[in-house]
Image 1 (cartoon, helix red, strand yellow):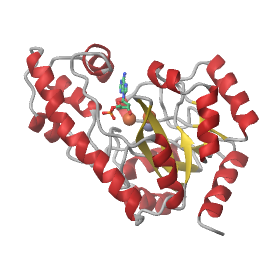
Image 2 (cartoon, helix red, strand yellow):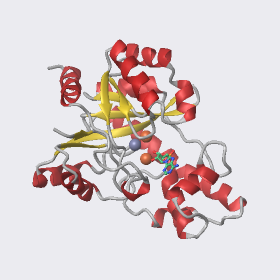
Image 3 (cartoon, helix red, strand yellow):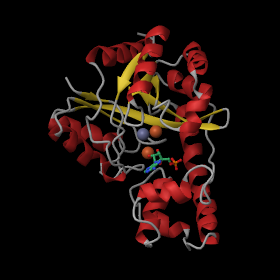
Length: 282
Ligand code: AMP
Ligand code: FE
Ligand code: FE
Ligand code: ZN
């Protein structure tokens, strides 16, 4: 059983359409794949239909932008009810602020000598229900300002760089509550993947999130080195948290994140499923 619980399609900042992503998951030998686009459920129906066709089990998921002590933290939600109003409204709020943020980023890049407007960004990402900095990077590539997303982030779009702008995100505790109220389970995405988030997510912070109801942590991720994986695995064991491993696939948008490059053990996936059943009250 090969299980990959974190992937992105062109509905957010991946480059494959959701149905194409599921076909690629089949080719990659995956039995279970979760679609976890940023802040939207938009790709679910196409992915689930492709799952029916190919025999790959598609898990509906979402990667929620949240905030903890001023740092952006990503929370994976699985098996939530998409009709739950409170969660859907909060995600809509995040997506709306991401749109107004594009104008702030475009203005900052223009001031830095790289003329860009919001229309340039939106025409280059017609499928995206959720827009983000990777789409800005793609527009910069199209204009010949940078060679790839990596270069765009390193010089212009990362925190502290001239083209960075913050966005609205709910406090992580609130997001955990919303996921549970919508009948789902939540896993902390790549907790030690980026310096900022790593500072905010020391062992005591993760313990506090566990006390708040966090269900699991993503241990095996390309942004975690072997020492980080060992430490997080130990911590998850002590705290009784589910351990996942996933690719965080973005198509051609991110190198070294091929489908199935990290996987989740079947018994850990089973734990998440039964916790989701409990969240739904049976
Ligand atoms: P945003 O959602 O607009 O804040 O942008 C963050 C997203 O950009 C993350 O979810 C990653 O998918 C992507 N990202 C972050 N750093 C890089 C990078 N160095 N190269 C390519 N994509 C990146
Ligand atoms: Fe992403
Ligand atoms: Fe993420
Ligand atoms: Zn992701």
